Length: 214
Image 1 (cartoon, rainbow, N blue to C red):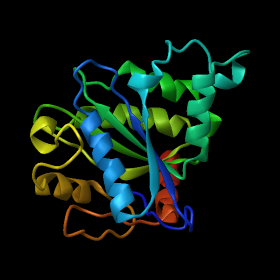
Image 2 (image 1 turned 180 degrees about the horizontal axis):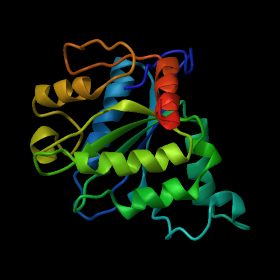
Image 3 (image 1 turned 45 degrees about the vertical axis):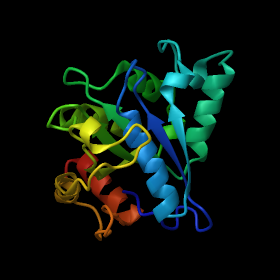
Image 4 (image 1 turned 30 degrees about the horizontal axis):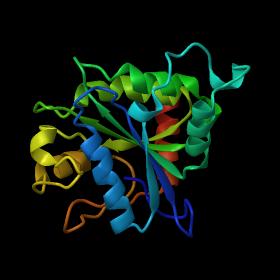
């Protein structure tokens, strides 16, 4: 997770994008979990940006080039811009992420620049949506976002979380997987789940090295 740190010394604010617009979706459970976790463990403010509620039309032009953007588009862009960090929760559909999240990534540009972003992938199966991580990473890197290397894949989501976002059991294998995939900063284990702290500076240096091919 982010270092909920000096992003904002008073009260960091995190926007959580719930990417799925599908009827009967289950990945929204993970977005709800993160909102509760952030507010309980970090005393951070957070909000879920639910793409199922926004129902944006298919992308035709980047926001800054739109002559008359809709109020919903402006609202979404402003919330991303003001957030100290963003968590993207996305399901895996047939080996890829849904068009709804690509739609809003392409819609914005400056708002993503140097924005700390964490990714959580979700699936009904045993792989936790890990197949979508690479393609989503490249899109965000192209936008100059600071994507943390650690991921949070959630397999068998229906068995792991209630509809309200309460964990049904402690997913130790998920937490260990999240730690083992991390290569950025210093992390510590939370007794209830897993709590991650890392410096944004370390993340930034690692991302810049990767972008430069070092």
